[in-house]
Each structure stands twice: as C-alpha cells, then as structure tokens.
Length: 549
Image (cartoon, rainbow, N blue to C red):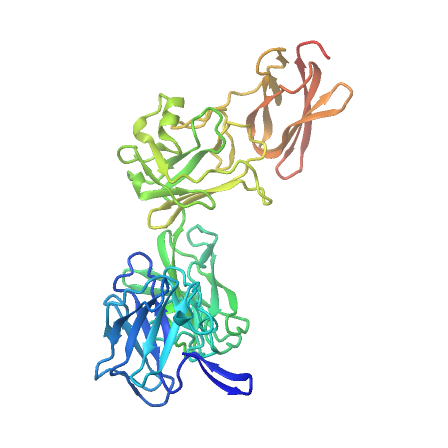
C-alpha cells in the first residue's frame, strides 16, 4: 500500500506503511541450512499506545505469478503489541521464543510478505527482482544472503520504498534493528601478536569494534576487556579504551597489551563494554590460542615436486605422548584446513609422519616409506612456489581440529632449486634439504666435512648429460650470508648460482649448467659473518666440455 498526499501534480509524501499501524520491521526467510522453524516476521509499534492484533493477517506472496498470496498467521484476541514494543511471529526454533508460533514457509526472493489489518489497511514488503508490482512497494528490497534478515533501518523508516527502508542485517528478533547505542565486536577480527607467544612473554590482542547504533560514540566511551576462560570462570587479564570517536557505522581497531601467560592451550574472550549498550549479544568474541610450543611441529616442506610425488609436509611429534594425527589439520596461507586420513595408529613421541597431497603417488616415489606414517590430507591447499612482496611464498599451518594453533612456518622459495624441499635444521632455521630428493620420515642427511672452505663437485662437466654440479661451503662461523656467481674468463658475470642468502656454516646447493656454452668458467663465493664483521671471497674453476660455437 502506498499512501501519498498530492498538491496538483506534485506528490509531497509517499508512505509504504499505513499511518497509525504497526510496521513490518524485520523478515527472516533464509536460514543457513534447513529454514524450518527458524523463519520469523517482526512487527514494531512506534506509537505511545498499545495496538491490538486480533484479526490481523500475515500473508506470504509468491512472486512467480499474479495473486499468489497465502495466509500464514491470524492475530488472536489476546495478541497485542505494547507501546514502543515488538511482536514476533515465527517458528518454534526462533530464539528468543516468538510471541506467536507459526509455520511461515517463506521462500527466497523474488517473494513478499503482507500484513492486512482488520480496517482494510495493508503493508507489503517485497524482496528480490520482481516483475509484478503487487509484490512490493516503491521498489523491492534486496534478496538477503543466507543467514541474514531483511531489517527496517532505522526501525521506523518509511521512505516510500522497500529498497530504501530495508537492508540485509544480522537477525535480531524482538530487538531493535538499529538501537540508539550499540558498540559491537566484529566477529572473526580477534588476532594475537605474536600468534604463538612464548610462556610468560608479552603479547597483544587486537580486535575491530563497530558502532552499530544510531548515536555517535565519543572517544574512550568503548572499552575492550580481555579474559582468560578457565574451567572455573573468566579470569580478567587486561583492557583498553577505544581512543577515537565513532560515528554510526564507523569501525575502530583497538589493541590490548596482555601480561605473560602460562604455557598451554587457552581460550581468550574479548568483550566491548559501553554504558547503555542496547544489544549486548554482539559484544563478545573468543579466540583459541597456544602459549609456547605445540605438540606437533613441521620439519620438512616439499612445495615444488618434480618427480610426480605431489606436495608433502613432514611433521614430528615433539610431545611426550602418542598423538592421533586425525586430531590435527594442515592448511596453507589462504586455503581451508585439511584433515589427515589413510595412515594407521598414533604417532609415537619423537617420531616423524608425512602429510601428503597424494598418498599413493608419494609411496610410489618413495616405496620404502613406512605406510602407516604416511597420511593424505583433504582438502589440500596448493603451496605457492614464488615469493610475494614480503619475501614469503606461503605459510604452512598446523592446528588442532578445535582451531588451536600448533605450528606455523612461513617459507620463502627464492634460491631453492626445483624439486628440492625445505627442511628444519637442528639450529631451528630453514633451508634447502641436504638431500635434493628430501628425506621423508628420516632426519636431514648429515653433510660430510669439506677439505676446503669452498668446493665444487664435479668441477668438469661432460658435453652430454644433465650438467649438474654442487657447490658446497664450510664457513668459519655457525651461520653466515653467502652468494655464488659464475664468471667467464673475461670477467663478465654469466649467472647467479646462489643469490645472497642466510645459510648454516656447512651447506651445499645443486645447480644446473645446462644453458652454458662449453668453456672454462670461474665460480666465485662471497661469504660474510651474519653480523657483517668478517668477509671472505673464494674462487673455484668449472669446465664444461665440448666445442665452443
């Protein structure tokens, strides 16, 4: 129903809701999963006096054809909306319980709902793309995504169009769609820095808070409180004030400095506190965190296989008890977590297991592996082979299936030969595997000592064949920065064999000379201590057999 006052040809007022009647304030028609019992329609009485609902009819409209309206609910003699109050008609699963229970069976758009009042006044709210004008007023509202309702914002808005009066929102049966004061914690924005702090070390919990109310909020009006959730209740940890004013709809980031926490799994709960908050249900969120080391760690990453074995990640049980790998998940930086299957038995303390993209392909490539410790992860997030602008190719993350972090390894791909995995060394740092094929279910291969600080093996490459050589170093420091370049006899730089990288004191790197013309070359290694206090430069010859073109 559209009501307008007309002066000559000019319409000066257009309404979709009949005057002096309650308004349709919210419609929830598409719950996540099965809609049955979750749908509702909320009526709002903005007047200062109660309004009787006896004889009022709620109908659902099917926008696929003309005149397809069907009755869903009729107001009983005792049904009344109090002054400034709300009346919810909905299914038995609506929370809080509706004022009247009815099976609404509302459809996704394009459809509509309609209130017909005993005095003949009507109100229509349509949603989705309609072709028949009887199913909307002015213009239809959007078709709300699954899990969201159509809410009139503000609650008494009547601008002459469903599209202007309604928007998709979080369902709020029986509560204001746009309360006067409402500071909400945005779900999913809680982050802990560092993600896995050491025991007793300082950490920071960050979150995003939004002003979902109609009133502006002054600076320092909103406080974020953080607690450690335990079996006996919440233990307050720290709090921080939002230091900026927030207009309606504004979002602000807030950081809370936390004291050092004891080692282990923890559940942190954050809550936004605002005096007079009209919607406390959206104030809180929680985050599962781990303080200290988790029970399972990543020890080797094959992110760019070249022998058909698929990607794989080796893990080690560093706890003192057997671990059921089905209780963990593996993910890359952006993909969903995958769960292991296909192996057998619990992983013993200090034992290794492999989480594979393709279990069968890995066992074909490495037939001697213990099949019980090879697990296939589904879904598998494809690991990136190239670095981003921060020098990170991807992030391998282990979590327990309840979401608690266990281990997180950002890795870089620069300078890692194709097919060579990355392995965690005894020192805790990462680098290309000492065995070019990797060492799944085995510790890293120990490199034999070198007779010199810099060695090339072999130093003579045949004209035919793979033309692969290995450069090795044995530095006088535990760690250092190394770069290896190839020069011709005229002193021209021909190739970068190894871009400058942080390496352990003893290491090797395979390198293909397949693109080089026959001749004599010089491999030059520049090495310096990690603190830059000492530098050395060494040279070894390399001959490629054959006739120069």
